[in-house]
Image (cartoon, rainbow, N blue to C red; front, side):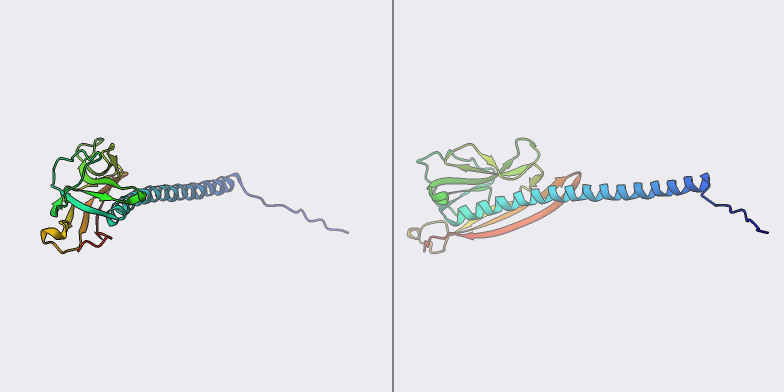
Length: 203
């Protein structure tokens, strides 16, 4: 006589299935939120890096052209920027806390009169930016609008006068930039300083 046993297959109840699905959805939502936040932070970091690269480019542009320049002329703070259209020639003048600098440069294998200066940003009148003029052309803004240059920033020129005036110091320029970077409602202060000596011997 054979005895047959009734086999009962157990499965998940609807309650258990709903709980499992709910937990799965919660985990997925947390994971997606973390991923989106990481992506947003990455984008902000990339944008901030782009702004910093623009600042570094401005400093490098000024340093490179000043290095191959001569006849450094200090522009007083809030001084008038002269029309440097050729045949304008700068007058070598030393000065402390200059608002800008005019000089001759052989950059790009072309002799031209260059001007770097700090002035009000036309897009944001309460902010300051760095501008460049070459041979009296239209001024070019070197720093992005997110960068606000503090008015305490300056150029310092020493030894600009020629040896015939009794000056035997090699021309030397110090650039000091202080300000803030404002991006996505986050304000980050910065302070940069570099010094450049005229490459051509002038003593």
